Length: 124
Image (tube, rainbow, N blue to C red; front, side, top):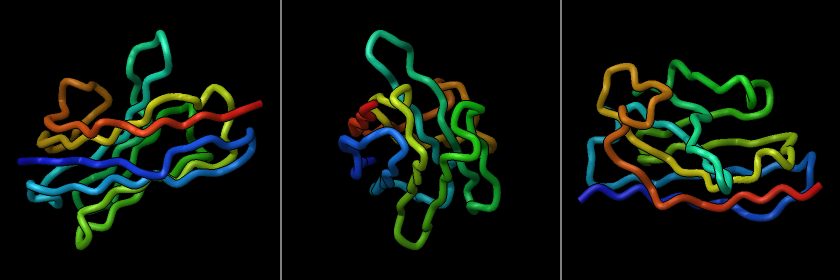
């Protein structure tokens, strides 16, 4: 049974930082593209970042480039999202996801497994 469990969310002031982590189990972690998505109230889920199976390549949404960094540790079955210079518009539930597609992508339909999500709230 595949499980993805996020942690690290919380309340932070604008300009602050948070580090999200996602622990995976029940799958061959290094065989999956890993991604982070977010969903704000009343909005559709949107792509934030993804990382290749080896960790050698990353892709970020334009809205977070220069502020967020995605990384993974295959030996620990974890993927992380370092979020700096947070803005109120970053407030959302953040979820990690695993894609068996060789390249993954920004489309949620490409992802096979999802975590429950962790709330990030940025106050102004």
